[in-house]
Image (cartoon, rainbow, N blue to C red; front, side, top):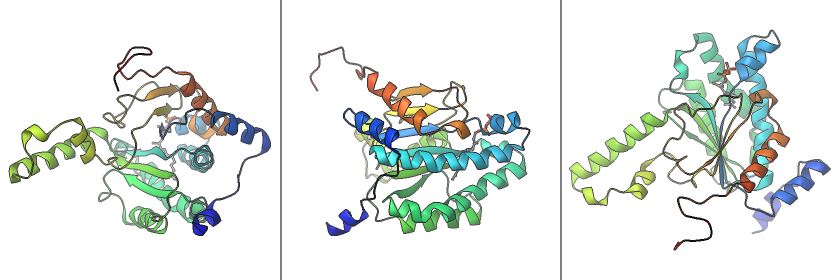
Length: 264
Ligand code: FPP
């Protein structure tokens, strides 16, 4: 208990942001926010910089948004950092992207620990370069006992691949005789996904004006609210996140039901 009190960090926000956070916290805060961080390349191009400069700036946004999400009391923040399709990019860009977790975590791990954030990852870990794996493993190990927000990096992640792996796992259990076909339902499938231990995302944010899911959490986002923003990821800031949360709070979520009715 004392340990928890000591770990409760003071607010990192300035006055006006803190006031807005207090107001938003009077209503429902999404348990899980998933973000497609798009527009780094365009941000760099607008400034005549190499694309990787946009990714580097995007990493700084990750820090800002992690802090704010934690302040809001969001339980899980999943960030799409590298998709299974991103291997098609030029080698130099891939190499840079693969170094970002190491740079981010070596700079900000103490801060994440202090904020009681737990670092996790979804995606195909085995195919990542050794140095990326080491950085992620180290951060996961150092934060494994933290019980605050989960900062979940989707690295080498693809939703179709995740679903295919899930199907293989379930079929194997059926073949072994430890599962009956009649046991297969939505809950069971969800419990075999990489996000099984997390609440379902309530809110998906995609920056940069693109309006698509790009193979991101296709199963998990079935009932999420979507917030597509014109801002490029390096320009996304705390106020943008608060605006998306406010928009989420104004949506009327019916989950297939009709207004004011229901038996659940
Ligand atoms: C898409 O923008 C962005 C990515 C493929 C990489 C996202 C990565 C980060 C924001 C940094 C991650 C940080 C850590 C700590 C892992 P794009 O390059 O496709 O942009 P464009 O559409 O404008 O070209």
